[in-house]
Length: 181
Image 1 (cartoon, one colour):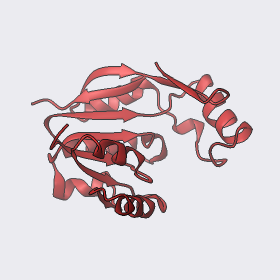
Image 2: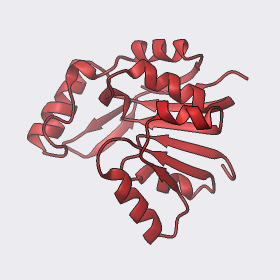
Image 3: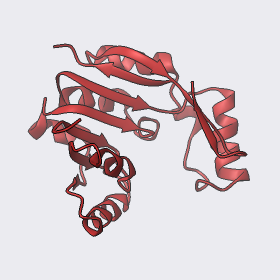
């Protein structure tokens, strides 16, 4: 990943950006919700990591940085935005031709309702109550539809199941896509 331009959309406190920094890419993170971006900036500064953070949406960033990035990640964000199609389209526009887009979201099914809302928010208090709205969870077929509309080709679909009782995760529907050349 040495030298790749990588953007994390919805970076929050910068955890993924910092992990990606270790692979020697040129890392940027954007987030338009909450104080996380300031925490990310401070943490990067304290750890001497050159990561470029901004308080901006992906849709706003397209105006200045269309087709700039080799890799765009958008993990656990799409279920929190008012227009998921707009976000996926913006992520696509930010990619260079041939670039890779990594998306993850929570599947709208009973198991996700039990683990993400009942378990994580109410039983184990891992997340603040009200973090998730079941109606905003996105089925893999819906996400694949958003990707097709954004001219992104789905190349792999894997999922992750988190068990809050044992604090273990296993892969089973995150999506990886590639922008056509």
